[in-house]
Structure formats: C-alpha cells, structure tokens
Image 1 (cartoon, rainbow, N blue to C red):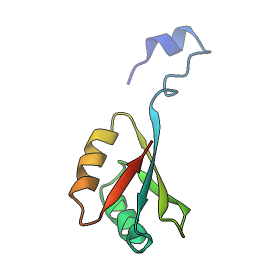
Image 2 (image 1 turned 180 degrees about the horizontal axis):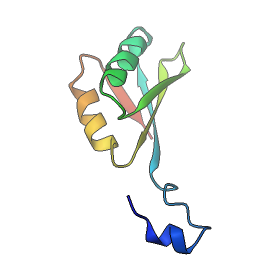
Image 3 (image 1 turned 180 degrees about the vertical axis):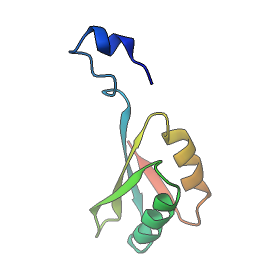
Length: 84
C-alpha cells in the first residue's frame, strides 16, 4: 500500500481510523468456541474475554475486516449479542 499523505506529513497516522473494537455478550460456555472459530478465520480478528462470569468479550478487528467477520460470526452456531 502506498500512503502519500503519510510520506508528506509525519504527524498523520494512516492506521488511526483502521482499528475497531466490538464488545459482545454471549453465554460463557460459548466463549471458547467463539475464540476458536474466529481464530480459524485467519486474520479477520482476535477475541479477548473481558468478563468470563458475565460472558463479555472484546473483538479486535479493522473497519475493513469487520463486515466479513460479523457475517461469519452471525452464521456460527452460537447466540451472540453485539453491544454498543
């Protein structure tokens, strides 16, 4: 990739708007399955458990990968609620 604006201005971070963190809630017994399924999708995202007791996770991805990752997660055999 070529980012000419970065080459001209060193104060511009070309990746500043690329990162995306999605918080979600699911049954705690399904957290491990979600982690394994997302890991199997390659580099679309990473799942981190934020509260094991409440079943809260954080999905780290990019704005570009999120639509494909979300579609795949919604097709998985788990119930998940994306939080704002």
